[in-house]
Length: 219
Image (cartoon, rainbow, N blue to C red):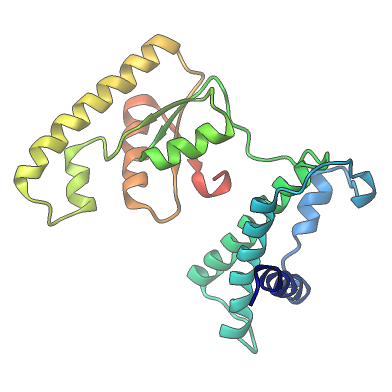
């Protein structure tokens, strides 16, 4: 199957998913955020093919739920979250495509004066891609040695020595940045179900009165 044929098949699946999943109305949020703008308000622009394909792939994955849980389509809480995440991901990518045609879709606002704490450099890079001027620190691990034992109960004691030193350095770095820039707030990005992220947030809240931001809503 050629790439063009494959793309057409994905689009067909995406359309089927949208038409069948009637209980989820992404257009309601779109109309609210866009003051009921329609396709006739589109300006000239260029299709972001990468974002478009990501949207289609998310819908393609969501489409599988229609077959897995037919005929009633009842989902428990965990499966409902998985399914909803795919739809939110698709909506986010579609909004990015529409942005290329003059539709300024409202998204989660990132405060340029805040300090963002993330758990790894991959998330840091993703945030920098959104706004290269953001103040971000990557912990590359937890903030307290006790938390590492929760994340990995089988970690060797010898390894904990190096991690403990790194925790101390990271906290000193965060305190130094806070002292230097006086951020409007400290924000920890937390991915759903990520134990390490939750522990980082817990400690940052205790130490810096940090707030939590759902990473899945913006990345």
